[in-house]
Amino acid sequence: METFGCQMNESDTEVVVSLLQENGYTRTADVEAADVILTNTCAVRDNAEQKVWQRLDMFNAEKRKRSRTGTKPVVGVLGCMAERLKTRLLEADKGVDLVVGPDAYRDLPRLLGELRGGTAAYGVNVALSQEETYADIAPVREDPRRLAAYVSIMRGCNNMCSFCIVPHTRGRERSRPVATIEDEVRRLRDEGYREVTLLGQNVNSFHDAGTTGGADAAPAGATGTGAGAAAASAGGGYETAAGFSNMYKLRGGQGVRFTELLDRLTTLAPGVRFRFTSPHPKDYPDALLGLMRERPNLCKQVHLPAQSGSSRVLAAMRRGYTREAYLALAHRMREAIPGVALSSDFITGFCGEAEADHEETLSLIREVGYEQAYMFAYSLRERTHAAYHLQDDVPEAVKQRRLQEVIATFREGAAARNAAEVGRLHLVLVEGPARRSSAEAPQVSGRTDTYKRVVLPDAAVPATLSDVEGAPAFDVRQLLPHHMGHAAGGATVGASGGAQAGARALASGDFVACRVTQAGPMSLHATPLLRLSGGLQDPAWAALQALWPTAEAASPLASGTSTLFAAAATPRSLHVSSDAGVPSG
Ligand code: SF4
Image (cartoon, rainbow, N blue to C red; front, side, top):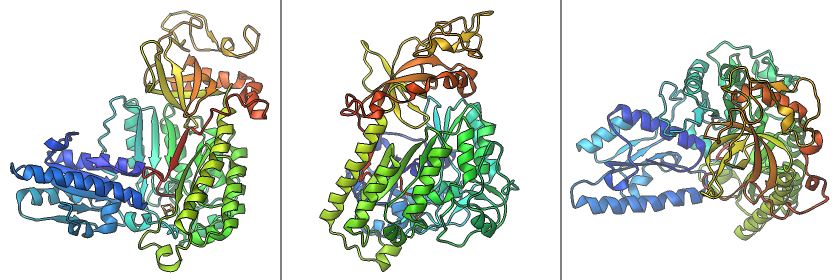
């Protein structure tokens, strides 16, 4: 079984593996040994589909080879491409036997049984559902480190942005019951997972209408002021970001919305770090920003897909906001959530995009400043609003030239933002050995709260808690760059026997406080200061943050006095016309 596309597809693959294991199948990475070859596909852009067609050619060759020995495998296409193309996949002469859409995975064992039993020549189920969330299926997660997990909380999208195929391949929005999400997160917490990413096509539009919630009240810790009050009264507890609107009829009624769900989950698993994707900007009410500011285990990372910086193009895209509303929200986020990292999606050359519209996109990128961006030249998708009603009238060469300008503008800003990281304090979750680790210079890598990759020397790092009974309290002042030996009240925490007590090399799953020393081309380099034995709730982390000198928060490069690192610094991650991007939001 292989997976193309977004995190939702990866999560769906875990559900499919679970369903098939329950029915006696075991997973293999060896195509030549497989009785069934399944590919979970993406349809968001044409080149995503081209990759799948190439894989199907390979599977077809494998099938022909094995037909001589009577062991030819069943080949199936799952996911968005199956939903989009349906029986056209069977007719394409690529050896496809099975076509199953994203809402029909429960039918896979039956369809496979018929095919393998010889009672059917092919199998197709592309029915979309208004209810299916696979809430009762325990996904099979195969990461032995038990580090990070995806939890799908809702499916489908109601927004019908004019360029997007997703509502046609994933169907209408529906959310999982809160209790089933809480059960899954509780299990992950108890199994020792350190990070959970909540998933959905419009994840922050989550709404479990069947569970009683405090939808009218801001959750504990949230300091939102209810800027979307008009929308709130229209939707009965539903609140958009100020200046944003829905392109579909608001669902009324109470229940648990996204902010309350986050409140519940981050309280239920305080030692687990939470992220979410993919959101729509309209679903960032002030209460959500308040919660993100207050809750230490809610990552300060916000995906804010703009798509364009021109109000005229945004209207053609049916996005439900103007340039001004988007900019106001981005500025509000920076004020509400100190240190927040913003990322976005951009499409160049959409129907009717003039040079002046494109310039507005460039100026928006400069004004907001993103850490990460998914940037694509527009490619028309059948069945979308744009395909029926708009002209794909920007020449391909112009789309590509504008894409290069968008990329260059993004890179320039991201490089400056990356360079400004030098000297900053970050909490990193260690994932494992770094790609360039060697016996002479062992290194580990991990990610910050803001999703930046960080490489650390794999040396013994002191811990906040020690096994040494009666050891004196650890003094985090030892770790401050300019405050060593200075007296400062309230800086002692834990039960460590000094800076080296409990020291050991870093391991996958450790939370470690680091000081950034260098902004490299693809990642940051940092010095590990302290392993937080108490995890995210370790009081040493709060103490260290409180004491960290603000002058260290920005390097000299940030004020433009040097270009030493700026020349080398490039964005942490750059996605250009990639298939594995964010298909939604
Ligand atoms: S771009 Fe995102 S919000 Fe818009 S229709 Fe597609 S999935 Fe929905």
